[in-house]
Amino acid sequence: MSFHATVLTLYPEMFPGPLGISLAGRAQSEGKWSLEAVQIRDFAADKHKTVDDTPAGGGAGMVLRVDVLAAAVDYARAANPDAPVLAMTPRGKPLTQARVRELAAGPGVIVLCGRFEGFDERIFEGRGVEEVSVGDIVLSGGEPAALMLLDACIRLLPGVMGAASSGAEESFENGLLEYPHFTRPAMWEGRTIPEVLRSGDHAKIEGWRKSRSEVDTRLRRPDLWERHCDARVQSASGEQAKKKD
Image (cartoon, rainbow, N blue to C red; front, side):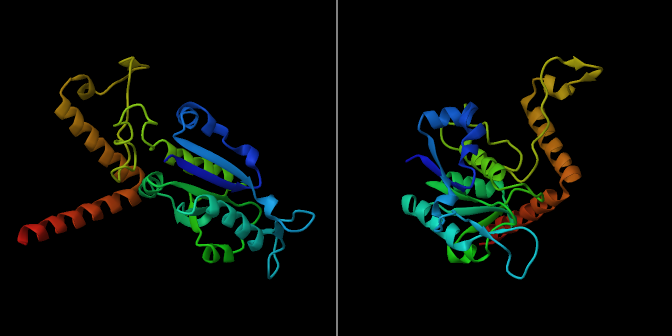
C-alpha cells in the first residue's frame, strides 16, 4: 500500500509543485506515493461558490466556513478513512520529526490548507482535525506549509532515499542538531577541513561528530538541548529501575 496524500485547498494548481521533481517526483512516478489536490470551493452550496464569511463578533478579514470545510473533509475521509486530517495553522502544535515519522508510517494524510483569517474553530472538534504549525511564522496560506509537511513524510518512505542510513543522522532524529559537513577542497580561502575528519580514525570521527552535534544544539537551540538532557535523565532513571528489578 502506497502513501496517499489528499490536500484540501483553494489553490490545487500549487500541487504537486516541488514535490513533482527530484526524489519526491521520482518516488511519485514509481508509485511509492500519490497525491490528490482537491478544490475546497467545489463543496460550497451556493451558486457563487462562497467559502468564507465575516468573523463572528466583528474584525478584519474573512473566515473559512465550517460547513464547506466539513464537506471537503468528509469527501477526503471517505476515500482514505484511516488517514489523519491535519490543518496547517500557526495556532497548531509544532510539527516534530517524531510526528513526521508517525505520519510516514501510515496510509497517508489529509491536509487542510487555510487562507484569509483561518478556519471556523468548530471544524477541529467537529471533524477531529489536528492543528499543526511548521514554525512561529505567518504564511499567506497553508499550501507552503503543506508542501513542507509532505516533503518531510515522503523522504522517509521506503525506497525514496538512496541509502537506508541517509535519514538516520539528520537533525532532530536523535533530538539534536546534525553535526557540520565538509568536502573538497581541503583548503578554501584559508579555511581548512578539521584534521580529525581527514585522519581516517573512525572512532575519533564519530566522537567529534557527536561532540559538535551536542555543542551546536546547546548554543543554537537551547530548547532542544534542554529536552535532550531531560530525555537522557529519564532514560537513565528507567535503566536504573530495571537493574533494581
